[in-house]
Amino acid sequence: MNFILKDENAVYYECGFSCDNVVFLTLGSESFFITDSRYTHEAAQYVTKAEVIEGDRRDLYKTVRDIITKSKVKEIVFNPSEWSVDAYEKLSLELLHVSFKKEPNFSQLKRVIKTQDELEILKTASYLGKIAFDDFATFLKTQGLGVSEQRLHFEAELIFKKLGELDLSFSPIVALGKNAAKPHALPTSDILQSGELVLLDAGVKYKRYCSDRTRTCEYSKEMHFGKVQQFTESKKQKIYDTVLYAQEAGIKKARVGMRACDVDKACREVIEKAGFGDFFIHSTGHGVGLDIHELPIIGARSETLLEEGMVFTIEPGIYLPDAFGVRIEDTVVLTSRGAEIIGQ
Image (cartoon, rainbow, N blue to C red; front, side, top):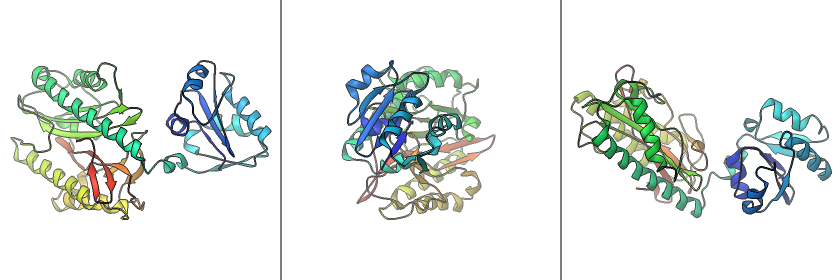
């Protein structure tokens, strides 16, 4: 297949290196990593199975067009979500003899089944993320009381980065009390108080692969981010237990050959039976790998058939506006035995 890529992680998957100004092109049996002079030295060191070509920093597409024209290919596959209108026009307008075929997410589809090497990297990323959760719990217990969400978010970034040893999968979500009712809460000036509900959603990158985990607990000097939690308010305890049962139902349900929507249904039914169906407002999960959100989608409309080697999150939640929210998330790998939480 002839194809062209711009997305950094998609390029990395093909050749073991990427940067923020690159076009990757595969034409028949030949592949080309086209970048500018800032990156050619490193690219020559790390790129595998492709020729590194230096192009004009201000217009890589001229070099790309020249290569395509010389090849005389008639069709090239691309992922439309990777390309701006401007970039696509610069590439295609002078290549009228070439048909550019849209295939959304074709690169993610190629890597939806993880290799054993990828699984080992993902397990390490998840394990390192779990350690960071424990380290952040220690920080909260010793230094968190009276500190604002904004400062807690800053401290979480430092802890999860391990002072620069790791990258973040995404900017952590540290949400207190009513702010936890927003699934992607932004940090506020609200301060952490004793007995406050704390939601932490965070992950790290190891060898470019992501981890993703969410825990919810009640702040005290004995707090932790384990799954067994005790809340002083009965309503919070009921909500928490419902979400936990829902997550356990989803993990237990997931099997090779079933539809992704049936995993979502297993979680959603528990929450609906408890009377909180209207407050579970997002899909049950998403794939995890080089991207923090990739295929498969574990949602109510996803007809994807689950296969061995897929890695995805199971993360049901209940969000009561202006009150509080609870989410519990783990990343799992699907095996012949079912879904197994990785990095424990």
